[in-house]
Length: 101
Ligand code: HBI
Image (cartoon, rainbow, N blue to C red; front, side):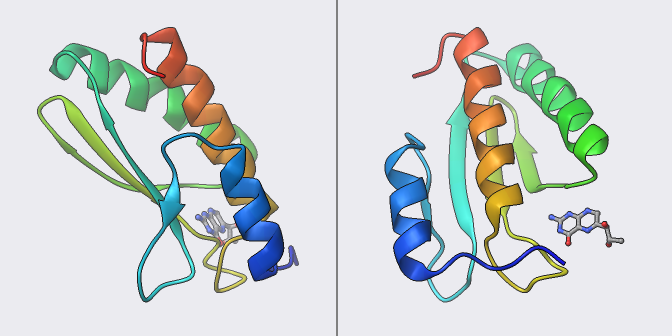
């Protein structure tokens, strides 16, 4: 099973993940993506879903109009692992295709 990251490794990983931060009271990371409209938000989710399914690692997320709130944690490990960091990086790359920083 994949291992939880140490606090140091988690902090180091977050430094390379613009927009992501730790979730208070939970071993998880989160980012809220704000697009220009629902079409872009849902387009982002569609592309991210394909990555998630391919890697068998799935986000907790919520869409309201043009925002997508994402929380990543590895349920099997009970905390943040390399799999969450990889999915967060993939989501940032997809968001950049929609013009987000
Ligand atoms: N997604 N975020 C997350 N965390 C998991 O532990 C996880 C998952 N998707 C699929 C998955 N685990 C399966 O590998 C196991 O539940 C069998």
